Picture 1: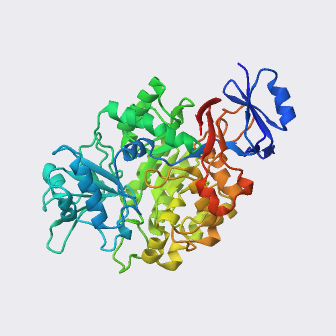
Picture 2: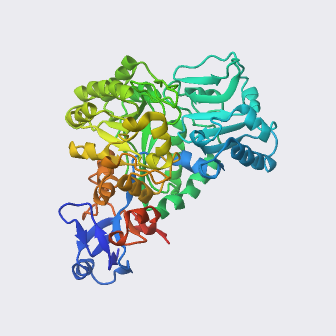
Picture 3: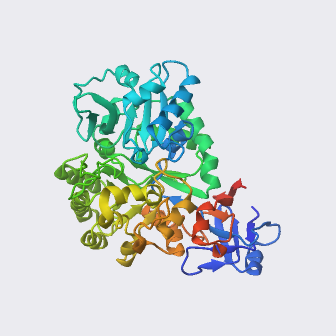
Length: 537
């Protein structure tokens, strides 16, 4: 097969042996050569297809190690309730009412992305949604993915009344009179929509029961969003039987848009252990990776667990999905079965519980455990030092700081808010923190994530933990080479090293010529997956 040569480029390889180049050649799905234009062309030989990059930056394909691929595909075809388009309860009522007008009565209406921390009147209630429609059950997912608000029709459809008990790891919010407000937290979400799997108290349940044909169609349609942003690999951090079956079917049909690593949720630990199955397992397009656990909840929703209460009036005390000793037992058993582990953790008290669990895992995993802490919101300096001793990989999402930084300052106070996701401290401690989006929760576009890690500013332009800003080179590495390391795929992807899989993105700008505030607008001019051009702008 003839080679493809990308010339007239600003190549950033993420390979310390050859960090920069002018040209890149690929053949048979792998990187063939990187270097000067003339040298690379000579290696490629006659008959190579030549792509003139026009001085644009060339990078390894971006790797998002925490991206809910299938749920993002669902969100793209649902009602968009994101800020700033929806900035109040009245705005939410309006978009739901508009959707109700074009939806047959009795069908569910679903919306994603509500950020009620920005609503002037606070959290919406089922009474607000009842103004939009009483003929459709409605569920509106919180921007965190951990909470939802529903209308009265949804509660009635599921037979949920005021005497419903709070499940382990979740809650139904009530007003002063004990009436359900329609807001449900964390594991209580499982009791609302018809779900494809029962995950118990192992996390928020957004694994809705939908026809496979519909999910496959949405997944294929989402592909262009990912590829046009330069993403070539994602890790879905909450995979149940539902997600895995859809990803397998897409892989078999050739419609899986990007390389996909699956983190099975911890409710499947016993069944997978009984089969003797652990990650990494699979091929270069679809594989099992680490196992996913939840410790606490969400910062914006008030269920992250801190040693001191937070909120404007100190009203948030946080919660956990498991008792600390139960979490440690689960994580240890997963490590004994051969799993790398990833634990969702936000608050400093939850971080202490997570560290106890990771210590137990590392004790049985050997020298290359690579434990992940998903989100890794507020570790203390002492906890960061513990990370270094244990080889922890913090999985950060700096988009949260941009989207909700001012809300974090208001609810957590200056001291805590400005040390959220302390990447500078983690890098200086010798760690390899990685960047991710947590899409559908925030934008899937990698260059937005990179920009927010570098500038550390809120949507309103305020600094948010400016001392923890990273350089552009560090941010790019955290979204490519270090992300590959987090997935145990550094021998295959993450750098433009000859012999590795030819996942390549040509950005639509030369990054050397851009200011920090221009980075967020960068997308892919061309994307290659395994040496195939899968996107051209």
